Length: 258
Figure (tube, rainbow, N blue to C red):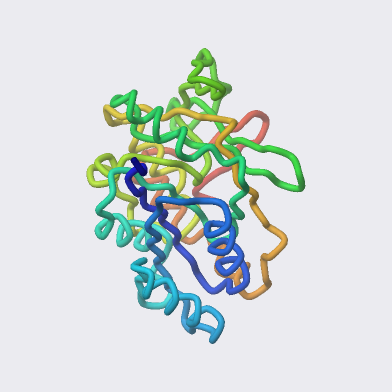
């Protein structure tokens, strides 16, 4: 009996080649999926339109949004439309490989109704890289601190409790119906804000190093970079969480002066 489909959510903006490569890698290496793409690019290239037309004919969902409404709005619009129980979230510059273990992660979620989200590991230049921390707020500072949780084994996979992970995860749609991305964050601080919201909820977050994808950051173009590195909403983030600083190891960032 085939496994039920899971959703794949992808928010894309401007970059043309990455989304084409991402979809190709999905088609090559995954099965039992239903793709949802939210695109707030100003224009759509001929190659991308051909791809979108093909995906729509296959029953996948393409959501065209006003220009630069942001990553949070795009993700929320995807969640509104998802009918499946679980969603794999990808950025448009991820490349899926055969050793992804996604369906095994869904098996873990089926066994553990207390877990809302399992985040994975991205491969940069052939080096697996995670981003796992305990989060706490003290003295108007957000602290990202090393994990102290124990590993738990599920067959050949291991997972451990975390508060923060990469924007590469499989989650319950039920959780995303309860915890939404704050649409006032166009980009960047939406990541930490989302995981802080999850930490305040009853849902647990886990990290699995065997859940993997390639992050092809080489395809970053100059025009896109102008939008990617904006920090105009940092003060809103600081006011929302009543903080001034973020401390990660020896790195200390002031949200009000950056």
